[in-house]
Length: 288
Image (cartoon, rainbow, N blue to C red; front, side, top):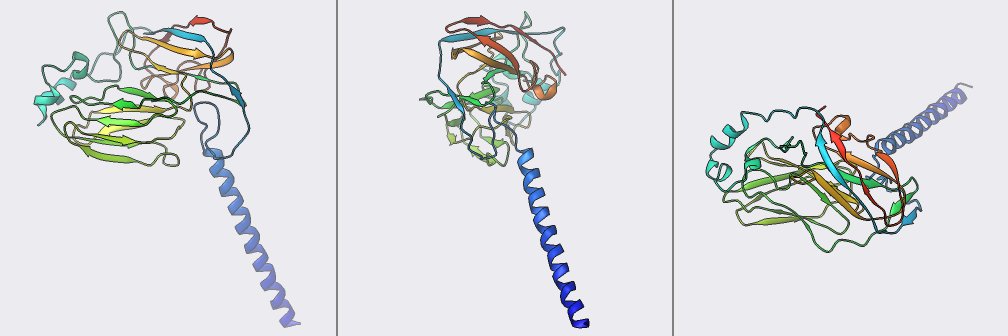
């Protein structure tokens, strides 16, 4: 009888351990899948293949202008001194550098409140994805002085990122994104040199920084479709070849609230576009 009791106890303990381990494994797996973010197109980055309706390119156009809502933030008055006092001041504070290269980059607002570096993109309806031919040219991130140009860059399918150094000094570029999707990248690039990087779409932008010039930063968006634009110096944007039907428009700026998403949040604001329609959508943004 004693021997039987011991035998049953061992079985019970083994069963409990097996059950506990299995349950833990299931729970951890479930939790991991839940935190994987969706891609900008509304799909999933979990690696699960789900058949989706393909939406072909259309002939519509969405365009507009982004302006600042209220009084724009005052540029950091200490920023120019960082350029002048740096060991690379001859390059960072060079006479041929544009005025906006010598100011803090978060809010570049024009005289009529036009806002630069606002990212605008489209999301398809749930259960669908955009179909589009891949781009034929790569995207370029340059650093001719001591800020990245452009400050906000969007890659579309088929594009690789070419990081150039058109400056007269070394730059050390580091790219950091979602580690589950894109590995960190870092390289010192000599004057006149470049590095090419292949990146995958992720929900939020990768950030670019430079160890040699600590104020340098840029945002690299890797999109799963070509329906994206970044506002220029005049605050305008334009997205072409837009399909007809129900879509969502998303707008992001690094200094805005809600993680930067200021037009309907990360899901965007729904719009319906007729075939070939040209729609003007002007937006306003302000600091969080």
